[in-house]
Image (cartoon, rainbow, N blue to C red):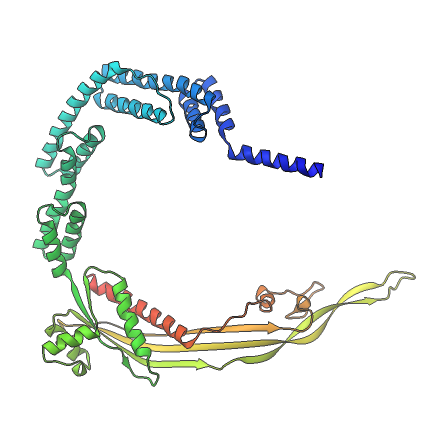
Amino acid sequence: MLMRNIVLIWISLLFVVSCDPTKQYMKLGNQSYQLGDMDAAANYFYNTLLVKPNHFEAKQALQKSGSIVLQNKFSSFNKYVIEKDDERAIKQYLSAKKYHARCLSVGIDLPWASMYDPIFEDLKNEFVSTQYDIGLAHMNNNKYDQAEQVFTKIAEIDPTYKDATVLRLKSILEPLYKHGQKMMELEQYKEAYRDFEKVVKLDQTYKNALNLRDEAIKKASVGLGVLPVQNQTRLQGFDTRLYQQIVATLVQHKNPFLKVVDRSSLESMLREQSLGMSGIIDPESAAKAGKIIGLKYVLMTAISDLVYEDAGMQKDSIEAYEAYSEQIPSNIPNGLPQTITRFKKVKYQDQHQKRRLYYRVFYQLVSTQTAQVVASDVLSEEVSDEVHFASYKGNVSMLYPELPVTKSMPPKPTAFREQFNQVKRNVASREELTQEVCKKIAKLIVEDLHIYIEK
């Protein structure tokens, strides 16, 4: 009992040490300090205070090492000023300011060399003013990439300087806006929409980008009428399910240029033109009707074959071999008997059920402008599901599918072993198979259609 308590205490101590890295941080920090690596030392002491904010030794150590790090930053700042490298001097001062704030966040207020503040302000104002003029020159010369780089630099140094932030945004928006206008003139409406959409996402009020975006998508949109699926089989209901899945899959693609017109909308639009769905029987009549109501394409689909099979639960007796041990007398006088493995032919029961659904679907994408079929295909496939439940009244662990070929035990494939331990489940229903088939068909059709919609 005593030994058990000692072990538990040691485990607890190890757990506490593993959850508290401050000792390791302090050790590494002190080592770095001795080696003169103040940046690394200060970082270890800083991490210690993140874990234990009131760690007294860490506070003293960070105060000492951090002060040296900060002083080195000011020394570099002074060096760059003397060398008249204004940009690097400004960045070094900002780095010092950020470092001071970092240490202050863990309660260490490092001494700040305020003598450098007015020098920085003068450098910053002169540098930013010069950069601002350079940025404006790039804007006037339509060099928007260069302008964006300049205004980004200004924003990093002084975000409040004049309208540098606005100009930076304009340096991004203006080239997109102008390219969108050019695409509109060239009647490349999809490209124009993409440009104006980017502009609107950044600034909805920028010029008339919002109106131009709406105009572009209106002109770029492709109207696709989806006709009801023709059922040429004796099985009912599948056509409706397939139709619903095709429409749903088209909508789920969220193509901004695709306007899907389903059956109810088609019927309403055709009634307005004194037309009916019953008159659409072939690509020519589909093209004619679609053109009248302003569609670019019409999708026609037909099911030519649909076979559903379910033989019900079946039972089979499968031959296998059960291994067993047998002792035989030794040939040596007074010797121990030998144990050998023998096999006997047995049968185990296999209950199984399979359901299968085979389909054959034909579709045509008809252009209303030319009355031509621009895409068509015949899709045929089958989906199935089956379950097997094997059982054996003897010793399953000693059951093998075949006899040994050599003196070694015969192989026992994983699939053979697992069939005796399967969790019982029901075979997929007809409804589930139908849903899977419809999803497959719809996916294949829609992938093909988008090639033409994106043209």
